[in-house]
Structure formats: C-alpha cells, structure tokens
Image 1: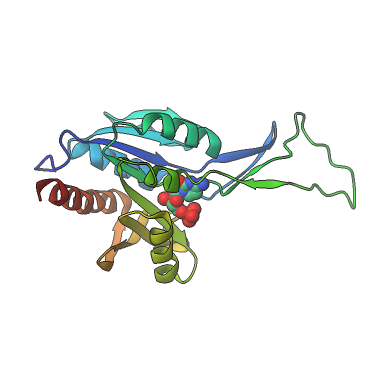
Image 2: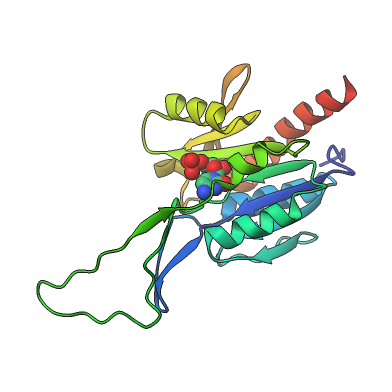
Length: 221
Ligand code: C5P
C-alpha cells in the first residue's frame, strides 16, 4: 500500500474454523483454512491499522505486526471478541464459526459398542458473534462474510440485513473454502458489486481498499 489508508485505526479480525469438542479426542468443525482472514489481517496492517486477530485452529503463522489470540471453540472466540471489541473501529468477521456446539460432551473418549451402536450428539446454537457486535451501541463498523453453496445473492443480502451490518462479503463455498483464490461479491446499502476471481492476498487488499473508502468517506463527511 502506498497510502496508509487505515492509519490510526484499530481493527479486530476473526479467522479460521472453530472446533467444538465431542470428547477429548473428537470434534466437529467447519471446512476453513483461515487463509482469507489471515490475508485480511495482513492487508489491514499494511494499510497502517493496528490489528488483532482472534483465530481458530489453523496451520498458518501470524502475519508480521499482527497480534494473534488463539481460540478453539465458538464460545471461546465469542468471549475474546466481546472483551476486545471496546475501542475497535472496525470488526471484520471472517471466521467460519461453527453454528452449533455439542451440549452432551463426554469427559472420556467414547467407545464404539458394535454393529448397531451409534452416537447421539445434542447440538446447541453458538452465539452469533457478528450479530452481537453489530448490535452494540457505539460498536465498530462491521464486515461479515457469507459462504453459500447456492442462491448466493438472496442469502447474502438477507444475512446482511438480518445481522444489520453495512458490508457483507459473499462467496460460493465451493469456490473459496480450502482454496487459494476467492471470487467475492460485496453487498451493501447500494446493492451488490461482483469482484473478479483473485488470489486471496489480492482479494484481501482489494477488500481493505473498499473498507477504507467507506470508512474514510464516513468520517470525512
Ligand atoms: O450466519 P452465517 O454463519 O452464515 O454468517 C456468517 C457471518 O457471521 C460470518 O461473518 C461469520 O464470521 C459470522 N458468524 C459469527 N458467529 C457465529 C456465526 C457466524 O460471528 N456464531
């Protein structure tokens, strides 16, 4: 970045999947590498922001200059985000938070019982971190992500309205998850703006430009 378009801004990013324990050796999770969230954290730092990254389990190294906090479960991510959010200017929620956690976790490894033996999991919804942050009075400017497998435009715009956020980035799960590239469609008050297929670092830089334009327009008008 030539210009430090986010200089002086505090940005909180979530990234990666969350893991929800079944027992000490098993979990349920989402298909997410963390690459997009990490690329966004890096791009925000390059644009001059102070960046905190709350990350679920990934194989990635923290980007230079970015403070990373590691979490496992959606409820841990929720707790850290709510603690960190005061004072943040922007919240970019890239994490693929598991929609449910297991409410009948087992303290010991569950043993198989044989032919007709199954295992019943009871699932309870995780807190919606993004919706909660977006509902805070004087909270940060919020950006959400939506990975859908179909009806991207309808689902993404409905999600943006339901979570009450100014910008939502939609993409097709089959084109982005566990991939090095992303084809983003931006949804905001004005409508939708499709972007080309880009490598994730380039997609992240492009998104940071879009966010900086919107934020800097808000604070200068
Ligand atoms: O509702 P859905 O999970 O598709 O919404 C996606 C957006 O909401 C993402 O930005 C994701 O990080 C955020 N989210 C969250 N907490 C959840 C579920 C999703 O912050 N429990």
